[in-house]
Image (cartoon, rainbow, N blue to C red; front, side):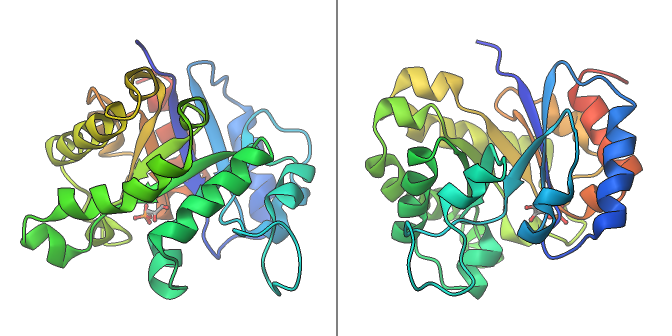
Length: 248
Ligand code: 13P
């Protein structure tokens, strides 16, 4: 089954209103029929986007519904301001904010309950890669998410493989390395639901740029990219989206 490609730009804690306008203008010059383009700005900028023909996502969501959680944002709040997706379990949240695999699974549920599709990030640190233990590490990250959702909910989830050693380093995984892990992730998902495994998109993230995007997207189990640094330059991001759209 052909899955529609997806390119997600994660601005992290970068960007400003001027860049909102610049990127919106750059993307509006193209017609992206064959790719879902998603932008994840910092939460305070989400409402600065006017009329757009791409989708918006949050960078994180609370695992609680409401209450005394200073600084956090609920799934209902993201839904109210027009987010269709939300990143969950980005390695920077896991590493710097101590997010556990269990919390990530709870966040996935909160998002789905509000009709927001979670983009669940997994990926190993360098030490695990060197110990050839990346598959075990990723299987452990996936397990609580896969047991928290039912098969129908699983079809709403997008996964992103982001090896930590490739994030912001300029050292992307090779297309073959990434394909091997993407296939592994799809196999793990298929143990819960073969139909969901066929449908869910698995994005690659970690130093994606316009030089390596085409080769990565050409792999069978790579359904697009989660782009950090290159999403902060409107021409780079637009080029990556054009490649995912099948243009050359
Ligand atoms: P870079 O593309 O800057 O390596 O960042 C990847 C990432 O973390 C996207 O979520």
